[in-house]
Image (cartoon, rainbow, N blue to C red; front, side, top):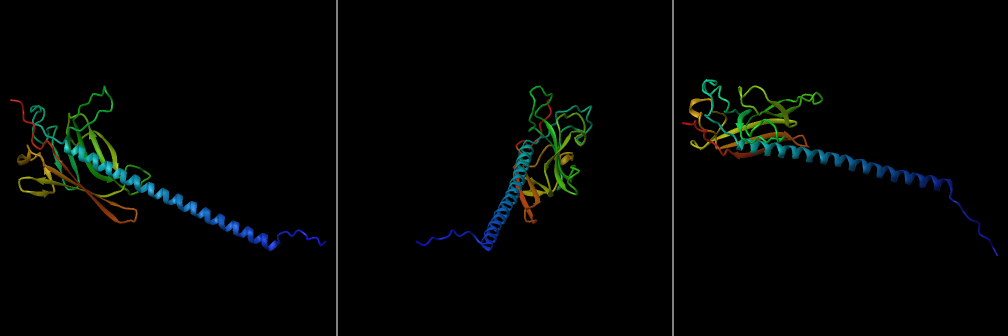
Length: 225
C-alpha cells in the first residue's frame, strides 16, 4: 500500500496569505478611521445647529417680552435717554429691557426684569483667532444707564453677520432701526422683530437663517396718576 506524505504550505503561499491579511487589515483600519472622522463631523454639525436653534429661540423669547415703562423717578432720570427702560435697535445691534429674566436661585435679589443686548463682536476666546461670535449681554439690576454693566456671554460661535428689522404696523413696512428714546417713539415698540443670522455651513458656504417674533407688550406702561 502506497503512503501519501503530508504536504505543508510553500513560502510563496505563506507570503501571499500574509499580504492578503495585511491588505484586509489596512482596509478595515481605513474604514474605521473614515467612519470615526465622519461621526465627528456629523456630531459637530449637529451641535452647531443645536446652538443656532437655541440662540434663535432665546432671542425670540426675550424680544417677545420686551417692554418700556414710564414708571420711573423723574428726579433721578432726567429724560428718555436716562430712563431705565428703553428699546434701542439698529440693523446690527439691539438693546432693550425685557420681562423674560429667569432667576436661577430662589433667594437671588432679582426680578423678571433685565436689560439685554445682542451684537456681533470678536470672540473673547483666546484660542478662536479672528472668529466672530454673537454675544449676549445681560444686566439684571435696572439702576443705571442701560449700556453700562452686566455680564457678557457667547450665544452663537462663528457667526458671519447678524441683522435685525422692526415692523412698523402703521406704515406696514420693515424698518432698520427703532429707538424709544426719540419723542415720536417714546411710548411704542415694534409689533414684530425679524432676526437674521448668516453663518458658514459645513461646505464653506454662507447660509441665512431667518426668524420672527411678536412683541406682546408694544405700548408703554403708563405712569401712575
